[in-house]
Length: 540
Image (cartoon, rainbow, N blue to C red; front, side, top):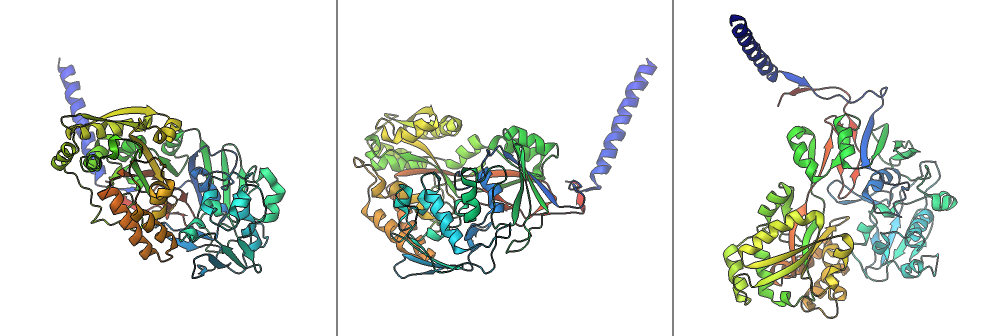
């Protein structure tokens, strides 16, 4: 008995000693994680979900492709980490004619591609023309359809884009068919990358495949395989030299595999999805980073819906929704409440005016004013299956104010055509914008030119006028005034759509990785550095 008791007490004493040691260790400092040793080279390893065999950004809008290709090929402009446009290959912003139709550009002197070939204005004209050709089938072609002659090129009737005139190797002019003030921002898109005319034509359909990709970016493509591609510093780059010696992009089949690779220290950077974020922020708190891209999740109201013709009902749906509560319950807080059609980064968004509001009592009164009592109205919503959890929270909120909701979980094809079905009242809509600009958020959905002829509500001469004026206004602060007016009428007064939330994105990054750019939809590594020496770090 003594032996047994003695063993028990001994084990307890040992456990207490261990706890004391651990407590003492907790007061000590730990060494920060060190980067792997690559023989003195600065190497960053990035995990992506398999991007496919082609890295030609003119043929795809896959952000995983752009993550790679944007390091290799630049356009005239690019967006900073703050989503501001800055010159890349262009020497400065262009001179613009008073009528807003003509843009006069000058390239930086001495530009060349990574193989040493001179980069000229002819390469710019070739690249923009190629983007519009039907055989390229570029998802980004619509962003350049306002260039004079673009329609003929898109139809395959011409291989000459007459809207671009080359004066010499550094000077060229772009002429538009109609004023479109956000045009310059389009030139900062990945698809506007400038390719070498001779090399691209020689490669034909093989451009972007098997290592056939050249550009004037900070890196050059060294290897392109089925499982990874390797980029190395472009020593001929016109700007500040990349700090990394090498950028390795490793391919994985899904999000789970790349997260496992990160946990096993096989990569230094990876994006994570919302479910992974909920777990990682508990176990990898110091390595989790979040950002809010220019994007909006909303419910589009079907303009053909007879039920939604009543403006008081639409207003009740807007104010009778506790967005923050829905986000916390369905998304674990990964999002920002939205009561505006303009993202917080879009000029024209006003934090005071767009303060998220919720008024259960007034919403219930408005439902009764609309002629419905005690749940007499039930609406139908078509929603992607993966978003049903959030919409169930919306349903609970609306039931409190007397609005019933029937949910139909659907695939992408059904959601795309649902607005043409008069039996559907609401459709889930995700808008991921390439840059902050009100035109993209408003014009395609709320200008009368884009509404069905048999729309029962939603048409507004005022909104049309403001959006048309904004397209003609080159000065962004003045353009923002027009967007703000249109947004107020659409989301506050007429309530023709229901903004839900601004989504969040997350990624994991090792502590020794510095200066990573979280672009709007694309991660960039132009200025990324690797911290070579360890630092003392306090135990959390």
